[in-house]
Amino acid sequence: MDVFTGLVTGLFAAHLASRIPFRVEARKIRACSFLEKRHSGAVLLRSESDPVHLYNFSVRCSLATIVVLLGTTVHAADLNMSLAQIMRGRSGTAVVVDAASGQILADYRPEVAARRLARPGSAFKPFTLLALLQSGKLRSTDSLVCRRNLHVGGHDLSCSHPQTGPLQAVSALAYSCNDFFATFGLRLTARDLQGVFTQAGFASPSGFVSNEAVGSIHLAGSDEERQLQAIGEGDMKITPLEMLAAYRNLALRRTAADTTEAERTVFRGLEAATDYGMARLASLAGMKIAGKTGTSRTDQGAWTNAWFSGYAPADKPQIAVVVFLEKGTGPGDAAVLGGEIFRAWFQSKPEGKKP
Image (cartoon, rainbow, N blue to C red):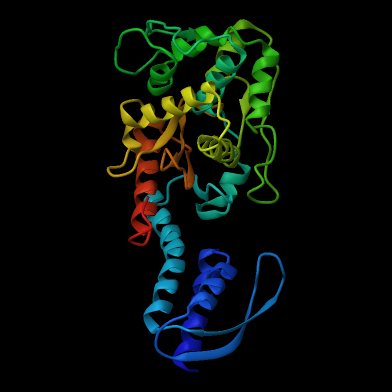
């Protein structure tokens, strides 16, 4: 085996480990039109569109060029290894996807991501806010002074965010104010809330994998249940992959040409959450993050589950992330891990390709 064949073989092996479509790399190899030694040949590769495709190429490529391509492919494998180190055997799951394609770049305990059903907690609030704003039942300038103590249906949902002045849509989402969302959430009917859940994709398979569980929401039968659903604590369950799909859709809308003012308000709230709000531990120097935490009650005991989901870079999203922990809090546990995942992805990017 000559050097060139060995390098291509290594590149293909790295592809299998990293899940990056090899046809992209093969196209890059064929595009090389410079440097030292001419190699001709045919390599049997697996492509996304064809079960098996024969790429014939005759290109000029230097050893350095192939090494760069190999390095690019290995970065995804490195991200998967980094994710395992970040999660460190924790009970839960984490998944990273390419925002544009929806391709899974890295995952930790993917079976949990696909099958575990849990309340979304405050990570549901962006969708409640979007429905309120789009329906005209809330203006972005409507304000409320948080009363701190909140008890709904026998549950203590008192706010833990810093004491501030009047909260409006952006700051209320950033601080994840339960009082704000429980109060204004009553402006949504039971059918409205069911529609919010469905439109966000929480009642449908995410499409990332096969054989996944599907979330559900029961039609609220009381004001208290509507308040609980508005803050993600009602009779509703979703999977981590459904959460990831919903935030990936937000990421795709972030750069759409036809975004609405309601959507832009939600985007500002998600960016404020990592800037000064409850998701600030997910922030990263050098790259703006958008995301939201959640701390949801369980039916199994007095502990809580922890959520973080978001995307980056905030202005031009390239990846979306979800973190779910069986025990913990969103701001104190899941957000920290989310920040480490964003950092690992950022550091895995080749120089010159960092956002």
